[in-house]
Image (tube, rainbow, N blue to C red):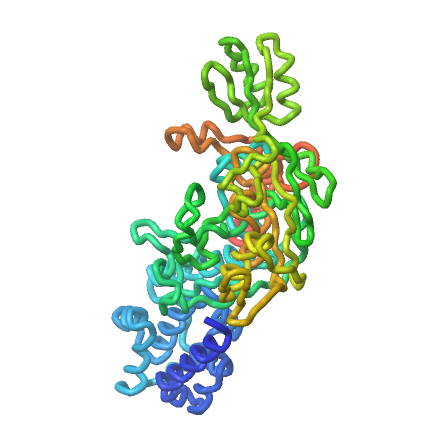
Length: 527
């Protein structure tokens, strides 16, 4: 929906609220018109149900408000003596329309200054759980989100099985677009499937109109080159990536697309080129942080001899296989140079696709650009408010931007381009774009295959590894034994070898429990 459409929905909801509660307001000693004034009616309602006024803020925070509405309905019922179990069930199941029954079909008796303490231990437990979920949803949605590394695209920088905290406030939290969705989950729920309402086959379905327009809370910094970023996969609305240029459409809201994590190789306004696997930005070979471990495939010939377990560990070999009697290993240049000195090694050959060999899987998927994953570009990274010419050479790069990411109607008639019905020979970008790649250069599904990442797809910045273990361990106990203690409580950014702060965390935790125990003992002795 557009902002105008959402304003209309908001006003309709206010009208429904007025019709359902104006007598309730009168019975509480207020005026009927107070139930009709947007926002002010919520402030008055908080006074009626004897709840703090700051709750009103929670009613206007997407996703969090879905949890708050049932609480407000229940609290309104209880403020007028309807505190039986069936009142609670009917208020929730009817989506608040039970208030119409109370407003018109009952003789309400307002209970002023009612006790807010739950009358049963079950009620107290439910109340505590509800507000714990609300607080966790608020943190998860707008401040910090847990994330698990699923693939090896950043291997030796971030490991498969690393559990991260992703900061939403560094680049600004993206306001949820899928307003009707389950809290604290991404796109799926066990058994039920999708965690949100949508129609995957018809983008114009009314279900898909329930999404909010893109909005973002202001961030504290901009995305810089070499930042590791979590983002929503732009290509997660087509049927598949490889060997399918049909672009069969499957609708998913931006905030429910698959989350990816890559390194920001180029930022808006940059010119990017890849020469024999090495990235050049604005004509200069990029210099990565010292923690970045760029890897390539190397064929290692040993004439049938095998590396010992100690050698595999010494060379930091984490990915590899044997093909036709030769090792195919994922190594950094430094590791390859070291392994070449091993007496059993006869040759070490870097696997690079030659310049000029066309790979149709590589962006922009057009034969006039004979590029592959190791020799690519140069390519311009679009910047907000910059204008580019539209022609046969540039259109393969910008077609998806104009149509899919910036929501224009594009028609191509011969050599002529029409945007929203008007002939155009240029286009001005509405937002910034980024080029995201994995450090594991030849084992990474990244921007080389789908193209640019729009800023509205950015989720956040990984800042902290709170747990790390081997996900391939066969059972839970094996996973516990495989915990990488040296990676626990380490930072994602920074320079030098990562330092674990796990011991400091344990000391702080023990100190907290010790202080809490001492304080509780002292309170008992004072009483």
